[in-house]
Every structure is written in C-alpha cells, then in structure tokens.
Length: 561
Image 1 (cartoon, rainbow, N blue to C red):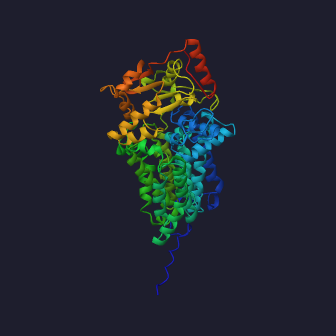
Image 2: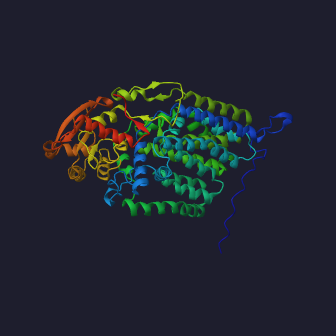
Image 3: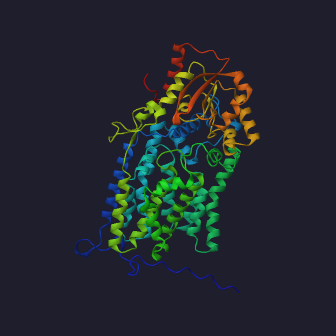
C-alpha cells in the first residue's frame, strides 16, 4: 500500500524573526509599524506621476492601433470580426483573418463602439485606465505575499512611476497595457493556485504568447508532479475554448500575426539578443539584478507570488528573444516585464534587512527616473522621410479630445488616391495602419501579411515558390484599383514578398502604371501604381470623396495643405 503524499512544508510567517526585517521594520513613532495608509499613499502618488508622464506621450501614436480600430468597428457595425467587409454586410468566411494581436482588446474596443465610445481617443483612454490599475494590482500582490510589510507594497508603484517605456505605451491605445495588467493579475492570484491557473490559461485571449507564459507560470505554481498536471489541466480550459472558437470562425489554429511576424525579416529593428539588451541596459536593477538576487533568498522562493512573477518575467524575456523584437519604439514586447519584475522586487525587499531594502528601493526609483529622458511629440510626421522626433515637455491642452493629425504619408495617399479609388474598390497597400482606417469602405490587400492570410504565409516563408504564386494570384484576382509599394533602395525590388511576387508578373506591367513616388523611411522609394483602365475624377469630385472619408472618422484629421 502506498504511503500518503507528505504535506508541503509550511511557509514561514512574515513575522518570523528568521525571515528578516525588510520594509516592515518598525520605524514609526513609539516604535510602531508604519500605518497602512502610508504605503497606499505612496502607491496613489506614484500612479498620479505615471499618468502625468503618460499624458506627455499622448500624442505619440503607433499606427498599428488603427488595425484594432478598423477591426473593432467592423465587428460593431457589421457583425464581422475581420479587417475587410463588404459594405453593409459581414465578411465572407474566406475574408475572416485574425489580424489583431489581442482577442480581448478587439472585443472591448468593439463593445465601446456599440456604446458610443469609438475611435482613437476611446482606445487611448482605455489603455490609460488599464495602465493606471497596474500599480495597485502590483501592490495587492505584494501585500498578499508579505502581509504586514506596509512599505513593501509601494515598491512596484515607485519603480514604475517614472518609467518612460511603460508610460508611453499607457496612452498608445494598443493592447500592451491590458496585457501587462493581465499578467500582474495572474501574479496577484498566485497564493490561490487554482484561480491563478485559470487566469494564466486566459492569457491566450489577451496576447498570442499567452500559452508560453501560462506554461512558465504553472511550473512555478506546482509543488509536485500531481499538482502540475492538475493546474495544467485548469489552465488549458480557456486555451481550448479559444482554439475551438478560432478554428470555427477563422479556420486557423493560430492568429495570422504568427505567420506575419514570427519569421519575417521586415519590421524588426533588433535581433532577439539586441532587443533584450536594449531593455536590460535601460533597467538593469529592476529587470535583472533584483529578481536574480531574490532567487537566492530562501524566504523569497517560498512565496508563490515571487515564484510566479519571476517565471512570467522569464517567459516574457524568452518570447521577446524568440520573436526577435519589432519595429515599435519603447520595447513594446517587454513592457509587461517591468511590473512583473517590480512585484518580485517588492517581495524580495520585504524579506531582506531594512537598510538594504530601503537603499535598493531608492535605486529602483532613481533608475526609473533616468528613463525620463524625453517625450515624443510627433511634429516629425509632417516630414516622414526624415524621421525626426521633436521633444516637447508639455501636456496637450485637451488630451483625448483634439483630432489626431494623420501622418504626412497617409495624408498624401488620400489626396493621391481619391481621384482613382471608389467605395467598394480594393487597394494593395504595403501597410495597414491609418489609411485603411480612414478609407473604411475600401478593401485592402496587406503587403506584409498582418491582415492578409496569403501574404502572411509568404512572409513566414518568403522563398517558397508555391506561396509566391498564391500571393501573386491573390493580387490579380482582387484587381486592386491602386497599389502602394515600398521599394528597397539598393535593389529596386519591393520590400514586401507578396508585392514582389505580383510586380514580377508580366500582368502587372500590362495592367498597372506608375502614378508617382516619394521617399519614405530609410530613404526607400514609395511608389503608387493605378490600374490603367481607371479614369481620374476632376479635383473637385476627388476632394469631395476625400472629405467624405474624413467625415466618417472625426477622431482623425488630414494635415493642412
């Protein structure tokens, strides 16, 4: 007969003298501990500082947010979770492509549209709310892991208050703040393993790398093999539901962004190692030194909160390395690593001698202040090919109210295409950001494959002849009224593999002609082609068409003539 499984050893009490003083050492009047309102007061002040810093960067907008907004608008208005829909109708099954990086964020934006909160400013405000909740949830996680450590719960908020990367993404309108919040919620639940396992499994609904973090988190939660299997089963439930829904609606096992980004050379500013190094050099104490030191403190390792925080931090670093980074500023893929590391720091500093804990907390706060180097005001967008960014240390007078000025490039394309492109047409565009958001009644072929299944597969395997042929056939089957192509300056060939396949076909020269070209980033020529059978409208009719597009998106405006 098998002996019963021995119970796990009890975790040391936070008041055990062997644990250490940490940030709960009695230093108040008459030797009494700090009252709890002191810690929560620091959290509140740090959150206000974070929000103010985020509002400095409110004008910085990454155009991928418009992929979310167009997809959410189509879901709210046409009932189709798709980037392209027929006007007044839902998308056909073949047109349904999961082109956004977050199911939950897309659904929330669509719900906002239905309730009247639509557009860029609603997305930005929503992301700011999610970011502002992060310091409080971090504090709750630390308090649950180290009850009685009054000041320790304020460590994450203080470490995050001045961080430029976290603040910049807080007003991006992207899924990044929600992703960071979801990760810290999982950590806050770590002392309740079953709830934490379900929350870890639900991360797949928030970002595609969710299953990777869930695997690391479950491994950190489990105390033995039996518990590991039980927790893994719980975490698999949300993932199974999502996969079934994905197969049923999109007929795909993984989101299209996997094919478009995980193996493509375009859109990446760093190698995986370089991307990680750029973040670790910016916050070495927070992301590396303190979490690593915590692993050598026995009492830290006994806390499920610290173990899960460090595990998710490690998973985030692994994913960023595998993905190879991306083009977006501010180390987007590593933003969740900041609060995860901050929670680990809070638990660690609660369980080490007071003077060491206090000195480390001060260094963490100062380190965050050193990232307070600039705020980006996108006046550079008027001359996009120069890619110059001007620093302005002032808040917008009316954040989330004034219309967002389109970049120079999409404004140029609006004026250029209006005489040739009518509602219901298709445009082949190398990008799918601001222009498709404005031209809401026009379908788009995506050169880099973010919202285009065929182009995405080719981006993953650019040398596959069958995929090149399929991408070319998709182009000619759609017969786009216009094509916007960025050429590699040294070779003269399109940077997009899908567009390269189409332009190499003799049918392209026979059916399309060059309309004009301008310089874009990296001094690469950006060329606009139009179909040869298109007769342009006169300038008054073309301007009226452009104004009609802009009137349907009052949250954005074209640059002045």
